[in-house]
Each structure stands twice: as C-alpha cells, then as structure tokens.
Image 1 (cartoon, helix red, strand yellow):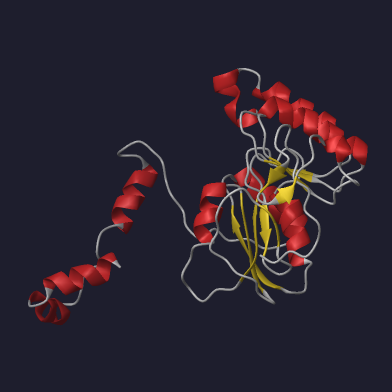
Image 2 (image 1 turned 90 degrees about the vertical axis):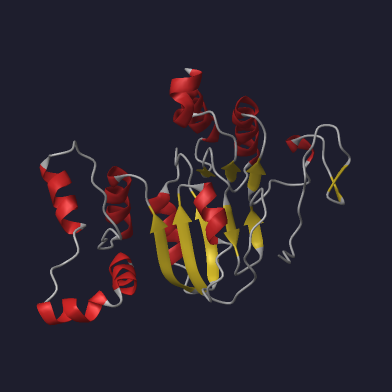
Length: 246
C-alpha cells in the first residue's frame, strides 16, 4: 500500500517478520505506537491490550475471536470481553473478532489478509460488522473507488456508529455504505450518525399460513397482464419469465 511510516512487528521468537526487524515484546518498542494490530489468542489479546494502554498507544484492532460472540460455546466469552474492555480503559479498540480496517487514501491498513483495493484520492467508505463481507467487497470489479473498508466485529467498545461518524467526517469520503446485522445496532447508528436510514431489503420469517407468509406469497406472484400482452408473450414465455425473475 506504500505506507511511509515506521512499522514495528512484535514476535516473541523471531528476529524478523516480513523482512522487517521484530521486537520480542511490546515494552521493547522505541515508542508507543499510533495504532496496533493484535493478532494473537484471546487471552493473550487481553494482556497485550492492557500493555498497549499503559504505554499510551493510540488504539488497537483485536483480531481474536472467542469473546461475547462465542459465549454459548466457551462459557466465558462475556467475562473475557468485559476483561478486554477493562484492560483497554480509555484507549480505543476495534473488535474483537474482526479484521480491522484499510485506509486506501493514505495507504495505511491494520488488516490480516489479502484485499483487492488500491490507493485512491477520494471515494466511498464501506463499514460492516462482518470481516468476510468486507474482504469480498474489496474484490468488487465495478468502477467504485474505495476510500476505506472497515469492520467492527463485536463492537465491544467502538461500534459502527462511532467508526462511521469518523469516516464521514473525512472530506475525501463521498459516501458511506453500511452493512448492519441488527435493528438495535441500526437504531444506534441512526442516532449517532444523524442520518435517515432506509433498509435496502426486507425479509420475513413466520410460520406457513401466517399473515407475513401470505403477503410474501402474494408478492411473489407475477402480475396479471392485459390480454393483448399475454398473446404477445406466448411466443417468448422464457424471456418473459426471465424478465419477471429479474
């Protein structure tokens, strides 16, 4: 991405990571980092975030999963997420359970995987909870310049609303696209962003025979065409069917 600032890898056993000299522990860094990507296991993440906060770091992305989203499986996800928040204190964190963000404007990214974007001077910002959706959106082949791609994961401390407000305050951002996975989050984002929001699609879940089910069945029925149009369509039923499906 062409980031011009210093990058300080931290690894307990390797002296070099990706051709860059590494430090054995956070305390060995020459200064407090502006931002950190924490890509270690969930318990070590809590410890590392605490160390970064004590150093005065600017913030951290927490990649590890196994927090509140996994409470049913682990039994300690809620407690561990609470411990993460306590360790962070006033230091901003994104996640846990997320990929982080890509800044295509300045060539800065805290991101653990491949992506399909490139440097731009202005463009749209994409914000989502899902890292899987985010990485796929960077691979889009349309002529849509991406200025930022950001993920929130669990949003334990810094959520979609706070990240979104920061993104749209950048004058180089021309539009903000949101992928929101819950109405409660949608309401909070609407309040903090100060936007009128309209869902792009709607789905129903109800038992067969219920009111929503009957409405969905009616909406899925092709309209009754005038007789003249039906005659014209008989010779091209396949294409007419495709038009309706589209």
